[in-house]
Each structure stands twice: as structure tokens, then as C-alpha cells.
Amino acid sequence: MEKYLIEEMTSQEMTEALEAVDTVLVPLGTIEQHGPHLPVGTDVLIPVEIAKRVAEKAKVLVAPPIYYGNSLSMQNMKGVVTITPEALASLLFDLCKSLARQGFRNIVFINGHGGNVEVLNFIGQRARAETGAKIIHVDWWLIAAEEIMKICEKEVIHADEGETSMVLASKPELVNMTKAVKDETANNLIQKLTGGKPKNMPKVYLPFQIWTKTGLIGDATKATREKGERILEAVVNNLIDFLGQVDKLL
Image (cartoon, rainbow, N blue to C red):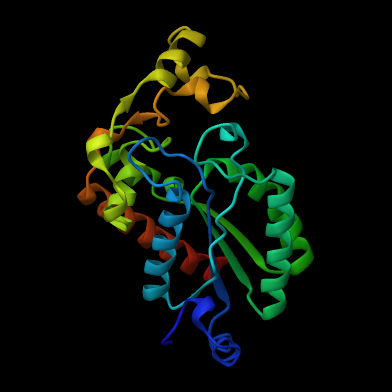
């Protein structure tokens, strides 16, 4: 298969590819601020890089990325372009129906943004029921969660060590590490709210600015390209292995 990006294929090339391929990867993110050092497209750039690497190894197709997602918690911050959860759900559901109509039996959303998780969960079963396709939702920071905890000091949150490392591996020219900072605002607030028991923290729906002074949560100064490459490798390998098991077992 010479091409794997759908946007670069002719209709005839796509028709021929679908004779051998029934899996499509859909990179999904949002446009929002990621502190002073990362681009606003971070949540899309990472899934796109993952999808390309998976496609090259697994010989699957990659749909054009979805750049806009649910960033309502940040809507009053600069660099944020959001759509509502309802609009995103409608878009994703229609996209599943259209991709299934084309002949894809495995529709895999590679998600780069936490605010999209609930929406994907909302449409997943409905899309499966109405299309007959397998709908798979992959959050990159979860499919390699165990590996990430061996590479980084903490789990991935927002524009921190893990996410910054991933952009350094994907688009290093877009990262300004001279502006990377450490922001413990969220951790300090959660410690106070829970009496020092952070795992007991309920979900509180607040503007994102409450949790940060700089736009990021965690420590971006510890990020490196080498860490990002290790995380990327783990994500890609785990996803390929998972898709292989899906074909065998489901």
C-alpha cells in the first residue's frame, strides 16, 4: 500500500485500498492553549504522529484529523477554539456512519484531549449499534500508561513532562523549552481540598484557570525528546498489538 493518508488518495486508490484494509485511524484533538512553550494544536499533532507511525507498520488507513473538540473549560483563555460536546458528538457519530458506509469495519479514534473522552464514550455504543462497525477509542496517555510511569515522574495531565516530551518527539521545531515551567497550582489546591488525600478528589467543574497560573499543570522542564520517543514507541506498539488482538478475539 503506497499511500495511507485518505486525504492524499484518489477515490479509485481508496476503493482499491479498501479491498485489503478494513481499519481506519481517526486522529482527534482540540485547539487550546498549552502553556507558554507548546503550540495550541498539541492535542492534534500528537495523535496525527501516532496514527502515521501505526499506519506505516500496520498497513491501515488514516482519516483527516479532527482539529476541533470540547474545550469549554478553557473557553475564555487565549488560543482556545472550542465546539460544544453536543456538536462534537453529532460530528463523530455522523463520521462513524459515513466511514462504515465506505466499508471500514474498525473505526479507531486516537484521542489527544481529555475533554473529548466523555463525548467519545457517549457516542461509542450508539455508533456501534447503528453501523455494525467496531468503534475503538484510544487515549494515547492510557494505552501506554504503565510505560509512561516508568519514563516520567508523574502521569500525563496537561502540557507537562509527558505531553511536552511527546511534542518534542513529534514536532520539536514547535517547542520552546526556554519557556517551559513547573506549575504546582493544581496539586496544591487538590491537597488542600482533600486534606492531603488527592485520590479522594471528586470531579469539580471549574474554569481551567483555577487549576493553573501558567496554562500548564505539572513540570514541563523535565521533558526531553528521548522520553517522547520512548513514549511514542510504547503507544504505537501497544496500539498495533491491541488491534491485532481485536481482530483475533472480537
